[in-house]
Amino acid sequence: VMGVMGNKGGVSVRLQFYDSTICVVCTHLAAHRENVAGRNADFNNVYTKTGFDIGDEAVKEVIRSGSLSQWATGSSSVGVADHNLVFWIGDLNYRIDESLSTERVLGLSEKRQFDELRSMDQLNIERAKGRVFQGFNEGILNFAPTYKYQPGTDMYEQRPDKKLRAPAWCDRILWMAQEHAHIQQLNYLRSELNCSDHKPVMSTFLCTIKDVIQEKRHAVYEQVMKLLDKFENQTLPMVGLDRINLDFGQVRYDQTITLPIKVTNTGNVVAQFRLVPKLDERSPCKPWMKVSPKFGMLIPGEEPATIDFTISIDNATAQALNSGREVLDDILILRLENGRDYYITVKGTYARSCFGMSVDELVSMAEPVRNIPLDPLRRAEMRDSSSAMASAGLCVPKELWRIVDAIYSKGLHERDLFTTAGVPEEVMQIREALDTGKPFGPFHVHSMTEVMLDFLKKLSAPIVPPTLFPQLEIDAQNIQSFTRKFLEHLPPIHYNVFIYVISFFREALLYREVNKLTAAKLARICCNCLVLGSSSGGMDTESTSSMQRLAGMQLIMLHFLETNSI
Image (cartoon, rainbow, N blue to C red; front, side):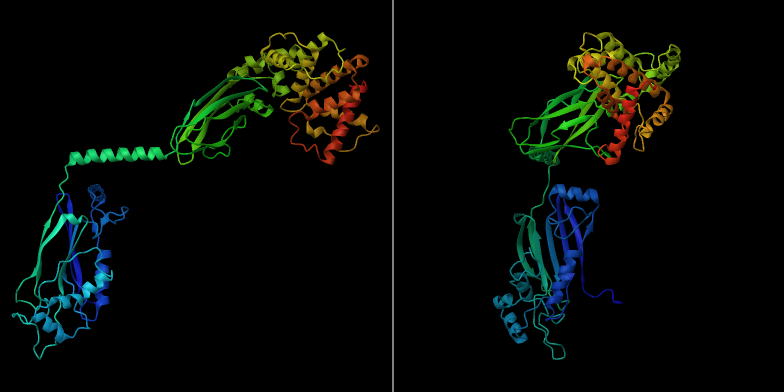
């Protein structure tokens, strides 16, 4: 019809009895004895394209009832095969193979000799080859071919004015069941009605219909889901952590603290773990935290693995903590491959220190740094109190003054002063006294000199800014003019500290016969703690030009130490 529809096709209906679904398909396939391929194509087209849109909730119910067989559960429609029972009926138009003559077919039909006819039936041949009706069943054809009769008679059409056609079983009933035991064909026969050129066929089936007891089904469903969950859990990696909260307590400058976490494989499969970064972050932990190892693997039954979490407060971290830009607080993510994430909280309290601060900040503080909170209002009060300190004439950090005074109290006669390491425990005690304002305990002078040099070196900005490094080679002819300009360009507080330290070193040189110090040795020390420090602006000290500039700066330090030009 208009190139869109023909006189052949099919219609399908879907039924549900209790908890069983039934699909009935009635088709009229392509005609003509030789057109077997056309009939096969018609069948496959109807079989694959038929779909019943039953909605998402109905689909879920069909799934739970176990009716679906080969249906893709991503769709909200079901196909022909997705039913408990399927009946395919109609004029399928399959004939007796052309290799058997029309006269032979007529003779065998009239004599009711059906064995040879059944073996030459096109539908039986195509089914045996697996081309159509795969999975379907049909009863034995024990009745005469149903086509083609003279209407109103029981005679095959053989009138001279009509086209002679070989009788055939065009009208068929086939069925398919998901459970073969649920269907039994009781009979398969034809009717002797005379109103058409076809004799209709009929069949009686005994079918078993599902009637699900919902309460029991729900109980079984819940039991199965629990078993599936249990099985899934048994195949997932699982570990146990002896703790997930790491409290490092009070952490001091230049201090390293390590806390371990033991990881035990509590599952039945290999567990691979690793620390992963949080969203939009590159590293799994902050710079002040080190984790070792960051990944590992545990076999079931293996001894627990230990992950060490270490906090280390270096100069850069101290600067960030002192300014309030950073806090010792983080959440780490330990991820299991194909498993869950474990969240490890890390916290600590930084004991604020004068190490890692700038001289401008230190001069503005009337109290020890440990007594000054990060609260903005309190810090404003401390800045206001700096005017009283300035009027008292304290123009260098009080911490530096305490260090120099303590060295003086011990005397400058100690051999190898400023070049011998101190006692680590004493160094820690001295730092604590500087931060809290408490008196120094007993100490060796070398411990105090080590603290002094470290204090100067760890300032957030070096006393001598990189911009004052000599750009040209320094010699005896131009050093006098350069040193004068050098002092003029030093920031005020930096100038005070520079003069204070140089004057102290010159005082120490008065005892050079005893302490074995030399001006050259102290010039190198000055370059190390006053010029380079820990914040030399990323200067490449390995390049030739930088080394020449550092050599020039060392000559300048030597000039200040050997001459009374300040």
